[in-house]
Length: 553
Image 1 (cartoon, helix red, strand yellow):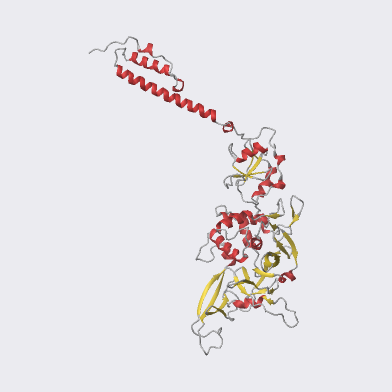
Image 2: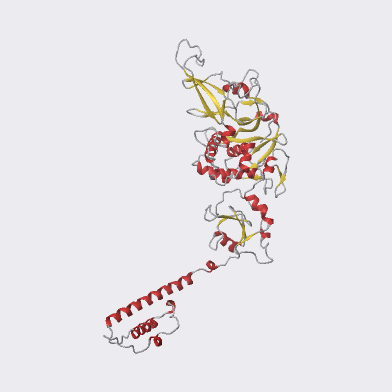
């Protein structure tokens, strides 16, 4: 059957121009499109009405969907705020590279506090306003820093992670060299040559207020009751190999505890600080979270308990092993070996002395230690006849005899003897046990421990080993830091009417000047080496004297 010829040629129906876009097409245009389609295929009014109706309905449905999409897009454009389409400058306008830099107020800048946004309390992508010192999150058109720039008129901000400085709301980065001192305060880093000269050169510096200070001998802010923390950190900051490690090593891939401690140590030894003191707030907040608020800035704790927790957690954070010794810098500095001999106490009638060791049944073991505990003799209940010994005194060598391997001690139902083993660690930590608890009260032993700051011979307390150390040759240790305790009477509403408040201080040695300083929170004062023992020593750090011919590390 021959096909019926078309009424019009295809070239006359379909023009050369492209069809209009779907976005601008209307319902009337859709009807014209259907009519054209009918003419092209030779269908007139006698064509299949059902197919035509279905096609027309589909065309109408398509166009209505396009119109609804267009209407929703126009509505979104109308509701969109103006700042979402703000264009950011890639560079400052020519001739205005130092715009707003004169508004920076360095006297209000304090980067010691925890990096949290002052509005959202988020620690992600935090910027510091260099005009007022507040922290804000982000710098985009919807960020808190952007709103702060528009609302208050503060335009210069520094990123606390990358240390890049930006101008808002324009959004460009500032490349001026005049901001290098601000970037240095965010994360102070000294060169290796500067670090090695800290203990050799007598270097003084001045803060922005014109106050002179000595790097490394600066006060630490006591936020409420964190003086125990300040004393321990000051003592650790003057242990040379530990300080050099945290000042020079790249610890960016370590935990937050390690990074924040490293920053605090570098701020204590900052030679170009804006202020002559530091605040431990950032590290304290991290310790409070990690210890489940066992150690925080609101409640006073025991310095030795805190030091034990801190050393163990830092050891693990630095990749140290729980079983293998000497796997971190902390263990290589403080860890030593101790021989323990123990024997069961039996109720024998012929045993005249409970603490007398018998030849048989002696158990020996070797343990590792990070700190040595020294026990004080019991304080006398009454004064002597001449009323001289109001406060009892004992030499340090007497309480060190606990580790001579001869003097036994009774613990529960066992007698024990202790002896140090070679080699001794480069630094020794002594804990003088002053506090004891019974079922009713906590007691404090006020006995004064007398000592000399130089030349403590540890050879009598070490088991001889000719392979490691010549017999009879002394092993000298010098005092580096001494944490002291002071009890102050305060009025109280309790029945007794008075209570004791603990005050913790730290005495540290200045190697360059060969002088001593006593640091109590923000107060730094000189101290005489001859009178250091007059305080109640609680935690002592002793450094092993290097042999002749060996240089200092």
